[in-house]
Length: 455
Ligand SMILES: Nc1ncnc2c1ncn2[C@@H]1O[C@H](COP(=O)(O)OP(=O)(O)OP(=O)(O)O)[C@@H](O)[C@H]1O
Image (cartoon, rainbow, N blue to C red; front, top):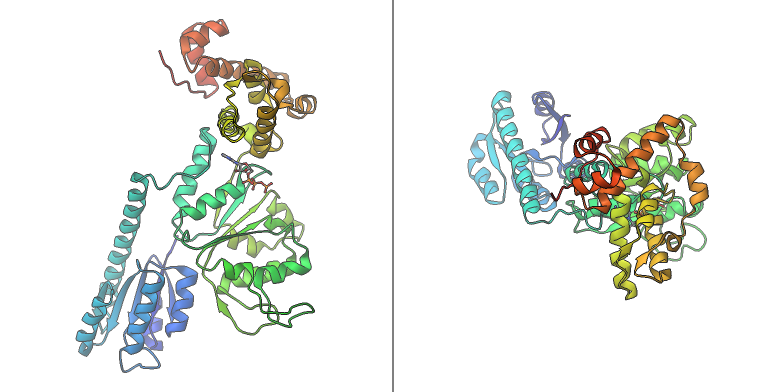
């Protein structure tokens, strides 16, 4: 992927020379401060080359220095390289005092300037890697509130940690109740936008005629009932994260408007003329198949690419090996506390059922079933009947297609149950299953199961 580089230069000759001289970079050219700030917001380049003499003061330094200050206020970690005339050395040094990374004296030698830019870029990458590692060491980077141990979910968590520090747009896919909003919040909290707000809006829950003003705001008198100027959700999310849930339900007319915003990073309120710059990170989620909606002409392909620079797919709970029981136990602890109960755990049958159940409502369903069970339980352990699972429907829904699949699934379930029952002790689990230890090891490998052995 090409790295963004912002070149702020008002001379058309130099603009065209600089546009093509940096290999490996996607060069964006700004001719003045306003354009520079729009491109900063849109591309968040790590490195900027900045001409000291910019209009309206091309012969002086005031505008160049003001642009430097504004860039650093917006993104203090940016490496700004001042490009100046030979007689401007003193001012270039002053710019370093203001926080510029380096200066480069004209005339421009493309090869040398490329080296300076590359070095600045590498340094910036190392610095942000370092910041990230520091945060990890300090333990600042847990995915807050996320309970997961299955390999499928650990992979998702790793992806989230990797993309959190970037400004890439993220599309979270998954069935209802899989944790899309929870992950959007975790992403926001770990990102550079965490100081701002996370503003969430459910595109499916708001009628089409209200959604536009809800998102973009409106001016007084824009329509009947618009009695005062009102900011929209996008404006509220400035410097933060905009979370558009159920993006698949966004009407086509608003898809065009949202796309325009994502390209230009400016909005106009309904009934207004003023353009307002907004800097935010966008995260979208949907349980719908967007590709199918694109082929039906219900979703714009260009918008799809804009919102899905990174796609994270949350697997349904039934595909997360071992997570159902982990979540059930965690929710039991939570509800024990909330309800002032001291339930010890689940009966063997209940554990087996939790493992086997299809969980059509995913994590949301397991949370509410455990809550119900904690309220209803009469003994010290939660039983199957306390959980009140819809077992008949579930058996039909989750039944395997072939007999061979059914046999494999049953074998893997029985093994998992024995491992849970004996806390990963291979000897005891093997005895319960009526097989030898080597056979059990062979089966663990076959089903990609892991036991934390306490032998
Ligand atoms: N891995 C997890 N660990 C702990 N709690 C979770 C996890 N995943 C989801 N939850 C909890 O389950 C509930 C549903 O999650 P969430 O609202 O994020 O799902 P969703 O995918 O956005 O659902 P919908 O598509 O219906 O809006 C929330 O209470 C959330 O905190």
